[in-house]
Image (cartoon, rainbow, N blue to C red; front, side):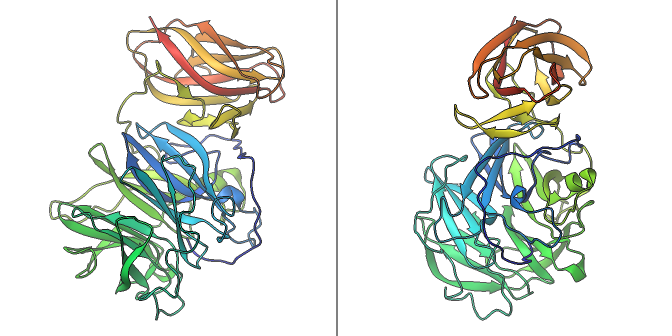
Length: 455
C-alpha cells in the first residue's frame, strides 16, 4: 500500500456499500472496496483481512484514510462470507490513526493481527476468534523507528507487516517499504506481542512495499511489490534461511489488469492448493468512478515448477475452481455469496451482519449448492417494513428455473426478525442458487440467514 498522505480521521459506524452491477469471479465481495489482503487458514476456512477502502473518498486527491480492517472468509473458494469490520482505530487501538495492510496469524489458541499505522509504525491486536473483535494488548507500537535495527533506512515506510511462524516455532515479522535496502525482519517472542532482538536487513531489487513470506518444501519465498519503474509487479526472492542468503527468483505476478497503481499480495495454501490473493480496481472501473482509492479483492491459483520456482500467475475471470459444494442444509449467513446485484450489508441486531434493503430485481448468487437427492423446504430469517415482497428461489440465473417462492411479511421494524418458510420442488444435485427479490420498488427486504430442509 503506497503512502499518499495522512488525513483527518472519521469512523464508519454502519458498514454500508452498494454496487449497481455484478462482476466476474475475479472479484471477491464486489459490493465492498477492499485492499491489501492478509490471509489466515483456520479450521477449514480461508480468512482474508483487508484495508477498508470504503472509508476512502471518491476524490482522486483525497489520499488513503483507512482506519478499519474488514474480514471475509470462504470454505470453498467461491462463496465468501462478509464478516464486516473486525478492528478499528481508535475504537480498538487508542494510539493509532490508521490500520493499513493487515497480516494475521494464529498461535496458542489466539489470533494475532498486525497492521501499519499508516507508514508510521506497526501495531498488534489479539482476539480469541478469527472474526474478532480484536483489541490492542500492549497499548503502544510493537515496532517503531526507535526499534533497534530499523534505522538507518532512507525514506523508510514503516508498514506492511507480515508475520510468519517457521517449522521450529520461531516467529518472524517482515516489514518496510520504499527502497531496495528497506526490507526488515525481526524475531517475535512466543507471546507474539513483543520482539526478540534487533531487526535485520534484507535487500530486494526494486523493493517498494507489500512484504510477504511463505515456505514450501524447505524453501523460503520472500515476495513483494516492486516500485513504479519496475511496473509494480509482485517479485520474489528464494532462500534456505528465513533471514539471509536470498537470491532473486523472478516474477510471481505482473501488475493486475484494471489496477494501474499500487499492488499488494498474500500467498496461502488451502486444501492442497496454493493461491495468490491480491487487489485490483475492477469494481471502480466497472462503476465508472475514480479508481485510485477504491480497490477490491481477487484470487488466482499459484503453481510451482519442478525446481521449486514459481510459475507466473495468469490472471483470469474465473480461474479458481470451487473446492467443495456448499451444504444448504445448515445455517447459511445471507451475506455469503459468489455474486450479487444491489446488495448492501449492515450490522445485525442478532449479531454479525445482515443483507439489507434489497429491492425488486436484486439478487444474490450462491455457487455450487449441493442439494444432493433434493430439498423440500426453504427457511429464512427476514425483516421488512413493507408488504407484497417475496424471494424467488431460482437455479442457474436470476430468471432461471423457479423452485420456490418465499413470502416476506411486514415485521414492523427493519431489525425485527421473523423466520418464515416455503415449499421447494426441483432442487437436486449441485446447482447455482439465486435468491431473487420481487415485489415493492422501494428497498424493503432484509435477510439474516437461510437454510433448506432435505427430503
